[in-house]
Length: 638
View 1 (tube, rainbow, N blue to C red):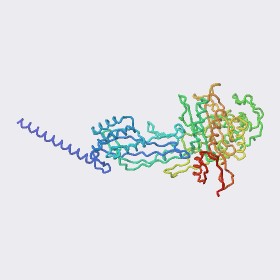
View 2: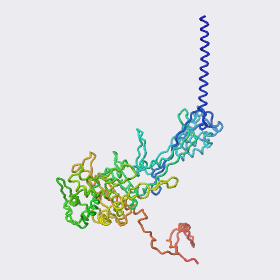
View 3: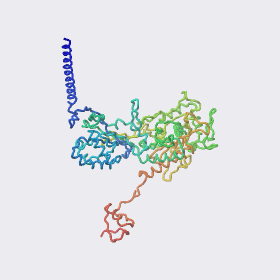
View 4: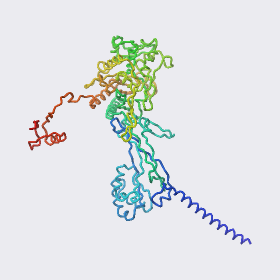
């Protein structure tokens, strides 16, 4: 009896085990059918239908950043990972052309020999591998050459070439040139997106719109197989206000001087007077290896005491409030005491009895006494006048990082008995180089304060989608008479004052030198002999009809500290090269010439060259000699 029960249990166990196994097979079969049911993921082979697929985003090509003349400053470069599926190639074609294919692969990608390529591909084909890596980061030119090779020219499904895995890199064709201002967009480890410079400020335009394509999961992971469901829309291009030629001149001249002076850092900005468009901006900082690179945008992001360049604002306030005239006489005695502190002139012993204009031209610190005497009864009037010039406001530029200028006020915790005289000569105030330049640009522009701008338009496929016309921040920062007086003083600085060594041989320039003590790395002023200085020159050219303003700032020079010698020479070199290269400054050689039907007589010369020129200009000619070198004359046609 027990034996019968044991037989029954075994029979039941086998029966139910077989039923469970059949159920598992049935469920697996249904699951496979459901997974392959979507027609959008259907591919060309039966094996592909068994592999899972998914939709992924296709990154668009990011727009370019161009200079004002449409030269690329930042562009997107595509690279492609090249793979091969040797299993789709017919036996006859494979045996006939594989050697020829490998020879051409070795010529294009010499990392392997033709024999090595052949062994690698044959081994992959035998193992039925469908994704053999031939080359990472191939250029688009190399990619196009692959399509002309034996086997590969048969296409993806007959020749096995897989080249649709694109990686897009941002490239700056000019290296360090304007690197920090051009900027970048970077995803940080915490997930936040860091946006710097023009790349960051105009990221929404540069980004474009994502597309969609199909990926398939194979043994090595998810791979793109097509089709593209939605084509991505390429990003718009940003046309900056920068002139690459001026940018290169400014960069090279500043770099040369920083090396010569063994300086810590420096910056240059060149601005168009009438529009406020920035034509060049350079920021160079010395790294631990002694090399200079653009690691921080000093020009727009770092504020320091401007020193004597701020005397222009003090003189503007004095003239506007009718506290002085340019012909008033002052005693520039050389040392000026306020409580226990003193300020001295760089010229030992001072300059004696001089006019206000001469005091400005020689950059005398007698301005501490002039401003203190004029406003000591109500220093708020001086501060309010500075504010009326826009000196306490940010410029509202499109790039991030501009700090608010520092101007202390009576009654604040930072105000003291030294604040008023020290502010008069550029201490206890702080500005960025761009803020200082904008103020000087307002003077050059007859009192009209312009907003500095880095972008003039945005384009997509040669169509302008947005423009950035010049923006006036203040229609008049001071009276016309004050502007006339200030321009006279700025020209005098170069003609007779601290900038007299900066005279140009081609045109007049106007500007102001500045030398200021700046904080050391420990945020303190050094002891005598250990102080660090900032040398600057800011002005415009040509002096009579200004086209460009420019500021040059050099921090912690080791060989010289004065603005004229350190920064003024850079300013002059930039001005001269810009002037020489710009047609807008020069009168055409035929200006004012009377129209005539007579053609100019050419010089004697090489016959073939002369004939080529005549043909190019469509000028009729006759030749009466067979010699190589000829004489020419002009004769009326008979």
